[in-house]
Length: 435
Image 1 (tube, rainbow, N blue to C red):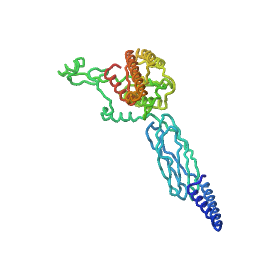
Image 2 (cartoon, helix red, strand yellow):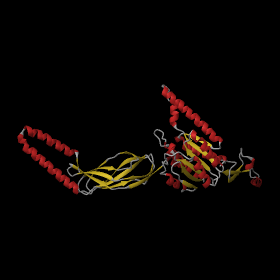
Image 3 (cartoon, rainbow, N blue to C red):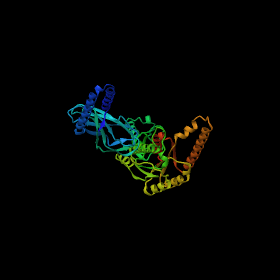
Image 4 (cartoon, helix red, strand yellow):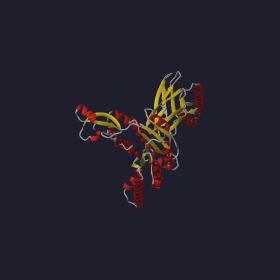
């Protein structure tokens, strides 16, 4: 039990009455009677509140939620009492959340039900637990509030935000991929899989012409090919300490890389390719490549609670394991944040992978470095920061050039640009036939 503001107002009035009673002793009897009456009503109010049935409260929340997106959580409450009830409710939500709208105040008519909502935004992926729901129920006279705790456990799985994947799927069905920057190309003339016969078009190469069909109908007929649909992508996802970096107002580098991975996996699966993944650097998980409409869900289930750790990435070990377990030629896509000290180790890893696979190394570029270069250099300290940033970028470019010469294809982009850059590079590989 706890007192309400109404009770404090009554007590304040009784104390003011005490001042007047001290000035006019004849009022002392009335002051004492008022105190006794107030004590009586408080005791009776407390007794009734103690014996009342607690409200029935139910939380309505999804079991799967996206990270970084506001979602509504609803609370339903029943008033089993024959009189009006005022209930203040606070839901004990997980700590890895931003919240708006709590506590909620319900004013319930006798024996009715009400529903209200508040908003949560999860800031971390994984499995999170809701605890109970705390309620403060006003007594009949509104002098006291009884605290009730409703045990309402709930576990929610927080996944990466798949808005980019959903947007891609929507645009793909409407043939408007250019709206998100994806340049979809159909390759004609030279492919790996025969698609159909059609009339000769200007620009077709002589090797496309089907001479038997041409002789049969006395008209030039060309073969049209489509990209090979039985190819394979293996992601190498860095879970090391550098991927914990976070740009201001955005997700961590690891979350951006994971979103890009899922978008490209969705695109590749729609192309008929198989997709697999191996994490390294902290938590090592190997997900064999598979294709089909269930492959993306399987990938999500395996990766939704993966987090970067404090370890440094071991590129050699990851490359060796991929080489030993993935025997079919694949596009091996390394998602990381490289440094110049990784040069030698990465070249060794690329050398191991290139014996059988096509290697694409996608490195996340920090926007903060570019900010240091572009900021006004009004002081000696800002000039030093700009010089250090320029030296860092120059060293990074030299490292990228050496990795290119070792046989890897390279992407060096900001986290926000990574998803579309990966999809476009994948489509380039498909259209060129080098995979």
